[in-house]
Image (cartoon, rainbow, N blue to C red; front, side, top):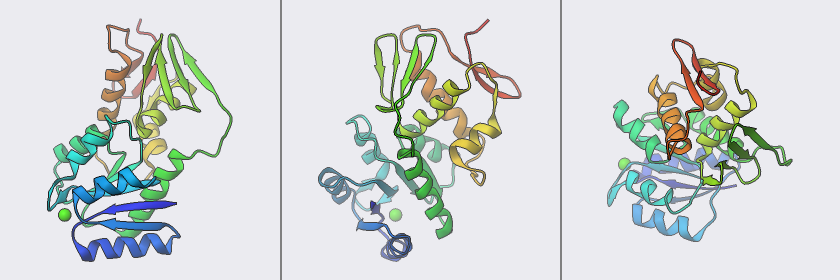
Length: 226
Ligand code: CA
C-alpha cells in the first residue's frame, strides 16, 4: 500500500512518514500543492493525507480539482483550523475524513486503516442493492436512479450501502456514526448531516422523490415518504 503525505512542516511530515512506515506502508512526502498534484497524476496511491495550509495555496483547492476529475482516492485532511465550517467545507469538497492538529499518531493510523478498509472491502462478490428506482452496484460502487448514473465518494457509498441493506429500518445517528466513522469519532454533530445532504443532492436531482427520510430525534430511514 502506497500513501502520499502532503504536509509542508518538515517535522510533522517526518513524524507521519515514520509512523506510517512502521505500520508497513510505503510513503511518499511532498510539501507543495503543485508537487502533490503531480505525484497524484503519476502514481496510483492507495490513500492521501492532505494538509490544508500549504505554502502555494489551500489544499482544499486540490481536493476541489480531484473529485470532479473522477479521482476516488481516499483522502484524510489535516487541518489546524478547528472551526466546524472548515471541517464541513473539507468534507463537502470530497475529503473522506479529517483530523484536527495536533493529533495522536495512533489516531492517524487508525483513521488511515479505516479509510483503506472501507475502500477495499473483503467481499469480492458483486451485489446490486435495490430500493424503488435506486440501485447500488457494489462492484462498480456506482449508484443509479432510473437510468441516471451517480458517482459516489467512498463515504457516500458506505452510507448509501448501509441504507440499502437496511431499507425501511430506522438507523440511529449513533449507529450510522459508529459504522461509518468508528466509535471514537469526534467529528461533532454536523458531519453526518453533511453527508446525508450530499447523498440527497445526488439522489434527488430532477425532482425525484426523497428516499432518505429524517426521523426526528432518532436518525434516518430509507423509505418512500407517506
Ligand atoms: Ca501547513
